[in-house]
Length: 603
DNA sequence: TTAGGGTTAG
Image (cartoon, rainbow, N blue to C red; front, side, top):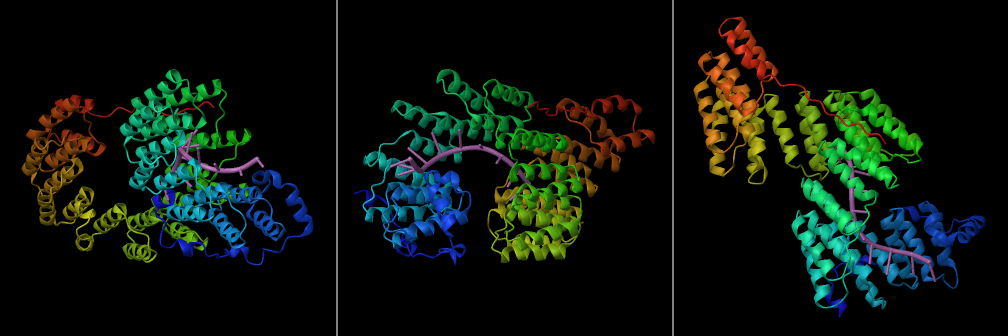
């Protein structure tokens, strides 16, 4: 009956053909007898003892040669050890080999292999393994279904997860437990359905399944990520004070991360103290979160101190920790230090990944060190990694920034040749790059080539083109694009209006610019400081001095401030007596005051 | 004597 529920993919049969991975070749029988004894002796705590793939493969080789074969438990432990090292596909291949040998398998074997398939984003193959299990009389249990459900959620196949979940309950194929509810809650949160997730939390309690710290942490984290901070903190309180569930390091990490993202340093610090009081020690994630927060605030040196501290405390920083630090130094333009950190990773046994490379690449690009950037970019492929869309976007931005449009085109083509799909950011970078390098025609033709897709109805893309056209003396095109928005049903945002107002001013059409300010308010789009600064600069340039005081007063009323170049223009006009010095007092009020609030963690 | 759910970086 259960078999009927599962859709076994058509390629299930071919899935069970054994293809030895390259690593296996010539290694199946190369174990020495002394090694063999050591490995067998320690095989009881296999996942602890086996720390590298070679040992695992050697042991597997040895085990499969025994007569009779070792117990299914021993094989399960080995598969599990390989999976723990994240060599998921290897674990799957070992499973296939076991089946060729007709070695016995049980539900633990099946569950481990399904988990590996799911981790490889191959949940459909996971279902095929389930089907194969049926053939071998292996009856799935709650763990099997939970693993598959989790795989579906991992692949964003939320509707399939939902229907499987409902089917399991309706047809009483498996009693849902707290973990199953938790997986479904995670799926709901992933798709922004926090309310439904909370409803399911209540429902599971009603059905006698007690949510635990994991269930709560998932929702708390999701609320934070959706900026529903008060809800997140309230749920945290409910968990601790009403339900008596103690938060653990993961819960704290989510809270601290969320608060840091919102610059609520005091509260984050308070939580760190709370952890100390509760004797919950910080883990690598916690330190990485702090390192990242400090780096984003420009405090890379403090972040470096945190890393030294964690090392002192016996916690090894990982690739994520160092990538954040590299990013931090890049943000400060301290490329020598960023490169030093990058180079030091090897000595700590860490291999920079594509994110690490992209961070450093971004630093070089922002500093216009384009030769270094290009070199690093090519190194990624040489090291056997594949640049992803973010890597390409970073490189493209760098090339256009220094005006190397031809190289930009090449990288853009290379990207598509390597099947990396450009996203909206890519197109934004390329279009903006072309516009900034006086290639508005090319930008417009690329825009038309893009056809009728999401980009064509993207207000950011339109705004870039409007700005590009207007800055390149093609204001008629800018105007046309702006008018197209209404036809397309696109809502201009404050940036779009600012670009148009700036365009009108550039053309000396100050009254039209002023009219557009009124129009945007009418349309429900509130102007910001930039709007007023742009308009003021236009007015000052074309000597419509009668409007200046009125605009400044409006700005004061709205709590906006003047930017440096507008202030300087105003002062020039006052100096030249084309504006009245009595305005100085008002201008003084509109100069922004520096407000600095930075994190300081005592850990 | 083995299997299932949560947190970090570009």
